[in-house]
Image (cartoon, rainbow, N blue to C red):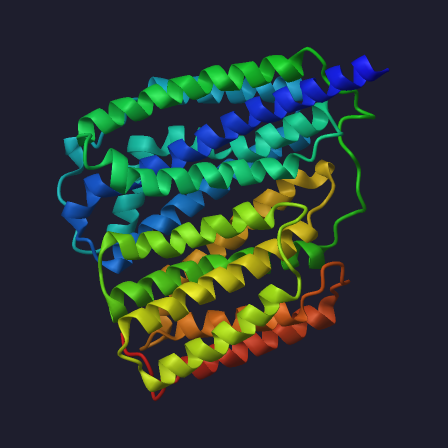
Length: 419
């Protein structure tokens, strides 16, 4: 009996290590290709905060497409057929490497640069990025279907650790010592190594496919209100990340390190929140309320202290992201709805990014989205209870309040922090 338990534990640990390594490498490749591609394109477009914001939205959109593809594979195909399809897509993506921007694109147009950038990205790296982006939910779903004793949601931390590692490895280790062409080749080698890891993961689950009755741990039916709650909890931190980054670069100071800091904090909150001991449920809402008071006061007074304003912005991203992401983990569904859960997280991230990067600059004459998202995040965190039942009355009140705050922020006379 003891020998069986030891073997069972060793088998589970081996699966967690292999699947975790594959998820880590996939996320590392996703986040390392973003600065490589942006570095290629920024000289033509200019290194303004708006370009960085649009680039982040492009990446979020492709990530959403990958998550949707993963959800379709899990929902409509058998495990083995889904595996074969994804291996095929990944191998076709590998054939397109190493990536490069063809000279046929020429100079960027005077208008519609955002669409031009999207088209170039899809041509240059879109398919490999798409294939990689599906791996976090897919590998978790495959492992959950194969072994219901493992909490596969912890693998999401491995994904964000990989993203965090790439985020800081690129400017400090990769960029100073490796040229752009060599970066592209090295990234392609990393992609080939990921394919090897993917095949190892496939071998582990292929030999013991689940029966339809034991494929996933089934949970309670999902309501539309719960899905909307996931979307809100993901959209507010994502929008605040871009709003705070734009605020820092525009109103405080420029420089690559200053857009790395909020993004790094954002990723760290996912790492620590998606754990069973992911944080105190009382501490972070208090931090959210404190950061909201500081941020609004700083916007009204127009503080000139670089350290103080930067600290308030980073504190706001940290506290609101941690509280919202912790709530997401507490509201996670059973493994049968895992891919849909991540799909709504990705959709929320895209909605928040679109609001801050594309919609807010046209709505507001000042950096209203920064303060607005802090206030909305504070309201969301304050009203949030880990296992509360959310109905249409709650959502209607929240929507009306959001419309009111947006209308107030759009008034021409409200120019606390000019653009």
